[in-house]
Length: 301
Ligand code: ADP
Ligand code: MG
Image (cartoon, rainbow, N blue to C red; front, side, top):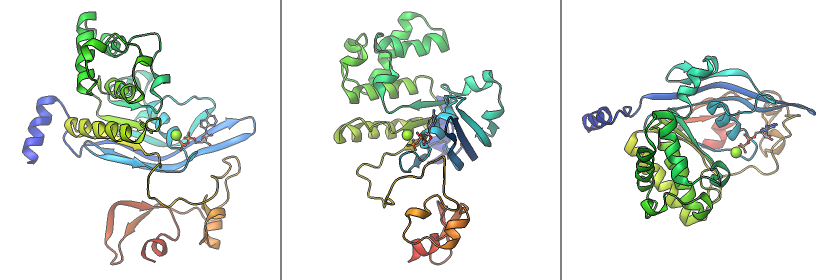
């Protein structure tokens, strides 16, 4: 089975499943505003490998998008500022690269899908033109070739009657179809990694499921890494009550302590480290970590 995957990935130029792609280490991002310094991202650690999906969960305002924007290099600086940490793409710190080196990675090796396709697409250019532009700019192909490739991509993301619709404008497509066009655009340069920031939030539930299925299918086919920031609609996860803290005045200790029913003095004074999580018998639960002083009590009762 492994051999088949390797052969496939060699043939298509895709990476082997499990190849480490991106590692975010102890990332800190803050915003310098008139009212003070807002600490938006405080020591984020995550990593994703080829063929792997990393789901990023967290309440609104917890820094999910800012982290993604920092990885993509589209964070406004100023007011944004990375004060600490590393963003390693295949072992190399993107924060230390020249602009040119970074450009080769962002968009080509790492692509992003945004929540709002309508504002990400240019309203006065046909979708075929915008898809084809990726190939014209990055690969220098002719106009006719670019159009053919655009149609191929539209087919790939299962937009019905792609050939007839290639000259249509973004507003002529439904929300779900527009999001497919965004996926097509992200795929156009065959990235290793896709970051999808709440890609289906604006869609109704049935269409959400279709778009997510498509994304998962393409990810598996191309062995891509996927960072999926999940909106929490329909998720059966426990959410802590109350509002996220004011980032200009983050509480001492754990940021959740004023809203937590079980917080102790330790929680009010010391920022919890990110712990490896174990089951009741002390066996490590791979891929699960917790930044809670009381993770053992919470997990094992
Ligand atoms: P989410 O987890 O909901 O995606 P964000 O990453 O968008 O949260 O935002 C994290 C925090 O950073 C929020 O408090 C937000 O107000 C703040 N923030 C984001 N962008 C800016 C900006 N350009 N200027 C000032 N503050 C910002
Ligand atoms: Mg967000």
